Amino acid sequence: MENKPQILIVGQGLAGTVLHFSLKQRGISAMIMDGDLPGKSSAAAAGIINPITGPKYQKSWNYDALMDSFVPFYKDLETYVGKNIFHPMKMFRYLSNLEQINRWIFNADRESGVACHGEFVKSLEEYPPKSGDGTWAEVLNAYRLDFDCLFPMYRKKLEEENLFIHESMDYSKIEEKSGLLTYQGIEYDLMLFCEGFRIGENPYFNYLPVIPAKGEALLIKRKSDLHFMAKNNCMMTHWNDDLVWYGATMDNKITDFMPNEDSIDFLTENYKEDFGEEPKLERLISGVRPTSRDRRPIIGKHPKYTGIAILNGLGTKGTSLAPYSAALFVDNLLNDKELPSELDVARFAY
Image (cartoon, rainbow, N blue to C red; front, side):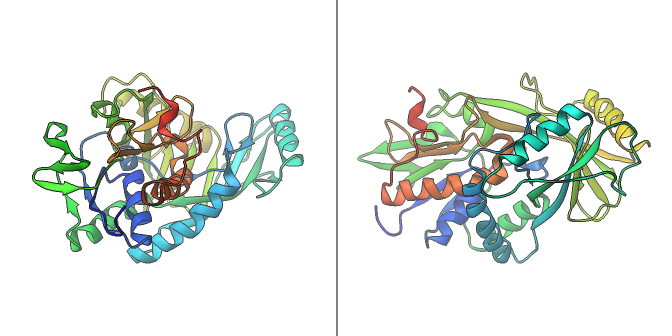
């Protein structure tokens, strides 16, 4: 491929932004198109990087390699946008009974590489005292990327460099001829689709098992330390100087992209149980995560149209997965380096 290929990225959520900056780090300029359609996951997510997965308290898939990728990447991105957006966090998780505590100890004793299972802490000043056999456990090497700041700031940079197209993709206007792609009269070497759950509307990739999963969270008027987050019933973390983010729900059978008022009651009851008080509700926010069937990112070129490719399926672990996945993707696109089979789009039948 030429040193300066013409590239169009479709979607400026997490995947598209990280991919664009990954290319920029290689000296490759690309356009980004985004029509700000409703339901975008990045509009409601808190950007949490949690190295402990699920009720078994196991270290997240490939976390050592992911951390080697995302820490320097987000620090470089932070420098580029000119604002502190990447924060190491003091994170805690409440273990309510002896079975959970023993499970934590079991995983901690067998942990290798980056340490993620920390020590037990009986109480936190942010939470009321708890009775019984439970305890807080510290989660080590957790981070948060400030989505609320990142995406508008990155878009401003794109606009300053005339690299942003504020419209939605009309797939019917894509033409392919002799290996070149044309869209609205402009030729591109590559069209890279980073559309999140809306990939289901894309005729080139709508065969992929990307499952929309709606998540909702409350923004609550409450002061919180910038570097603190904790989870009992739900996760609480900093959003801005006046608000905390508290969530999130998970709905794999979505009927619309708008906030569900029933979720306010659900999250409010959990908050009251966590803190013993009514939340000072600012608003409910919602977004739709793109989760893949096998819980792994989907990257690579279309099996028929080699100039068309995808980065998607980042799901609930997207903030940690995106830089690692984008680096592999860029090497594949620019240097034809083989992709890991567990991430390659080719693992799904066309």
